[in-house]
Amino acid sequence: MTSIAVLTSASRVRQWSKNLLVFAAAIFSREQSFDIWWSCGLACLSFCFISSSIYLLNDILDLDADRNHPIKRFRPIASGKLSIKTAVILSMGWCVASLLLAWSVNWGVVGSIVLYGFVQLGYCFGLKRQPLIDLFCIASGFLLRAIAGVAAASGTWSPWFLLTVGLLALFLAVEKRKAELRTALDRGVITRKVLLRYSLPLLQRLESIVASSSFMAYALWSAGPALNGAETSWMLLSIPFVLAGIFRYQLLSDPEESERRFQDSPDKTTEKPEEILLNDRGIQLTLIGWLITTTSVNLLDRFGMLP
Image (tube, rainbow, N blue to C red; front, side, top):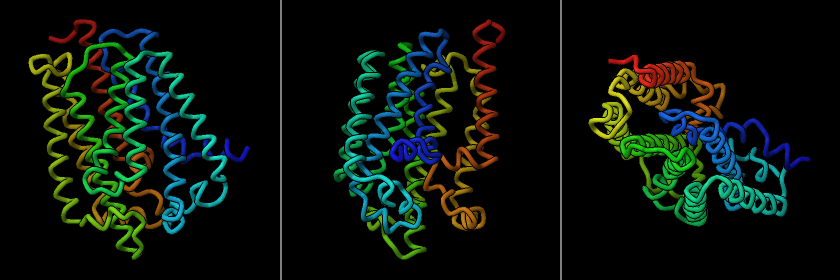
């Protein structure tokens, strides 16, 4: 019962929220049907299982480092709530369940799950200690979720759409490392060896490059069919929300702003992108505005109401 409670805790549910990216392909698909949404739902659940499996394995390998971290020391394995033996058994069970679910959809989803598993295993066993490579490993998880959604929906896809997802994921990975490095410098405890290879000026330069590239990729996607992008160029109306979201996230990651906002809630920092998504009002309003705009454009275009 303890292990089940641990895996269904609020923190784990928040971690699972990133798997909703699988539904992106269904949202923007011209052909809406129950089968598409059902397949994407199974693919999403499959990623929930495989990501839980990897999280458990990673927490086992990072046990000593997590115990020295101000926040991660409360994780189930680091705190002793979950034994290593039980964690290994659960990890293997989640992995098998994930593959079975993916197989029930199609081989494209299976391929995405298997590739995700290999990348994350590489990350757990050494790639997380390699500067820059660790950022791409983190970003690949988001990109493979989007690819799995495309495979589940069995529809057409735009390279600009996948490029946007990949670049935004890389942006979040850079922000994550930047927040971790700031925490390590403030507390004088290095919890990740790779942080010794980074500096705040370097991460800020990477942040600037990736943020600009993400915005340009999204602009090219929203330009419409002429550039092999969205179904209609009216998606350009959603650009302000994307730009506002990037600006807002950069504001929250600023050292002075972060210290002011999160001094009473040290667990809610840009070290955890899902916490920002679920707790910051500005990001939530931006996301709602983007969803309303893109959904409206999709519906109007589908019913031929756009010029």
